[in-house]
Image 1: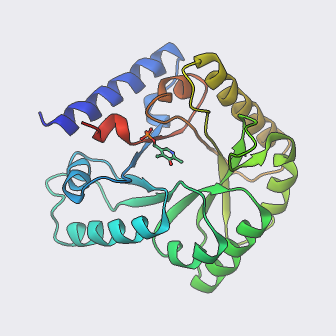
Image 2: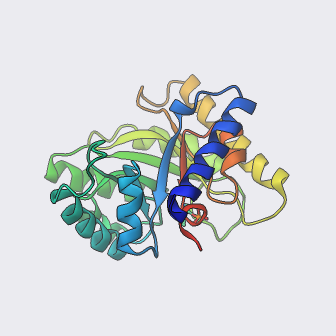
Image 3: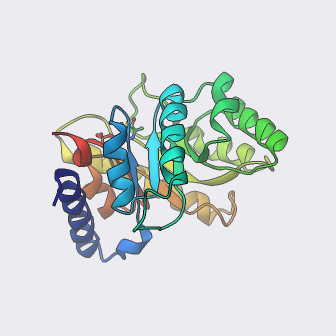
Length: 240
Ligand SMILES: *Cc1c(COP(=O)(O)O)cnc(C)c1O
């Protein structure tokens, strides 16, 4: 097995183990493979290994890599594992003036954290006649420099975003702080899950509000235990 295949298998094994600890079905969890700063041949390899959800956090890089992947897919090079087209996820902070460039590429934006950004996505999506999925990024770590709407303002913002017709509000995204203290990380994920459940329960959001995007290479097992439905993992798969 190649190094990447080996690492990917280890990640999937760990997800399965976390699922059994939490009595969850691994089929409810989507792995977004984060390809930032990864060479194209390594990206081709994860595609051949069956990964169809890829994530980037910068617009320029997303455009470049998505074009390379398109070319690869058009050649039919992903065979013999034809599990459908690649879905791109924009996972990093998105400036309003870049929205127009990412919309034709992505299927989901994980990082919506202001009404102005949501409105821009809505307007540009109407022009393109599309309705992309968007997650509300919530700042559960209370760190002032982090992106994301504060937990206390999230419901109000979700209510406003939910009225926009050309954007599907599909759930929440959060990032835990960089720390070795797993309780601090868990607390963030629990806060996100509680907010997610509260929003669904109050009927503020629609039936498409199903996803909880949380967990990266260093904390995805905790995220699975706390209810994540989307994991965003890069270095655990690619780093040497
Ligand atoms: C880079 C990045 C990830 C993946 O991080 P790894 O530690 O490499 O798994 C996940 N989410 C966001 C928003 C990122 O920018």
